[in-house]
Image 1 (tube, rainbow, N blue to C red):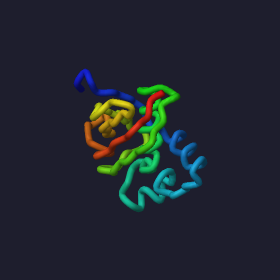
Image 2 (cartoon, rainbow, N blue to C red):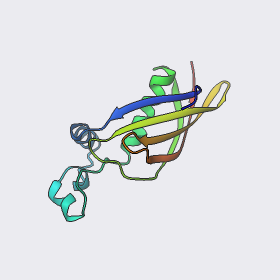
Image 3 (cartoon, helix red, strand yellow):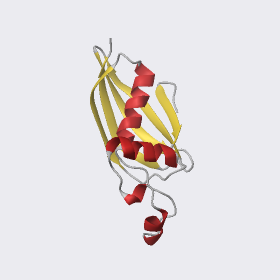
Image 4 (cartoon, rainbow, N blue to C red):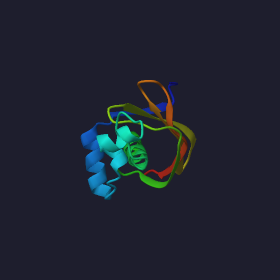
Amino acid sequence: MSSDELLFVRRIELPDMIAYAGATWDWHRLHYDSAYLAERGLQRPVVDGQVFGAYLAIALREWFGPDAVISALSFRFKSLVFAGETIRCVGSFVRADSRVEVDLRVEVVEDGRIAVAPASATLALP
């Protein structure tokens, strides 16, 4: 990681995934049902892909403060993330003036695979 990169790390546990499912009404069995997962050759629940938008937004707010306004956020999934894995959101400045543009990615700490990329955000700072 270079000195101009921003970093946010979070371990995603099954209770976090269940709380997110409850908040979004997304109860797909892929995210919690061990029998359903075993039938599909998966050993652990799969993290809901949309949660990465939430984690990127949390990271951006931590980096730029609670008064920063996220005006655009886009991201693309690259690989599955499973319950119990730790993610690292990494951001680097593309441009900063009255708006800040940031390139983003989400990596899985345990093995370095890229979970989300490309990703980017635009923010207005107070």
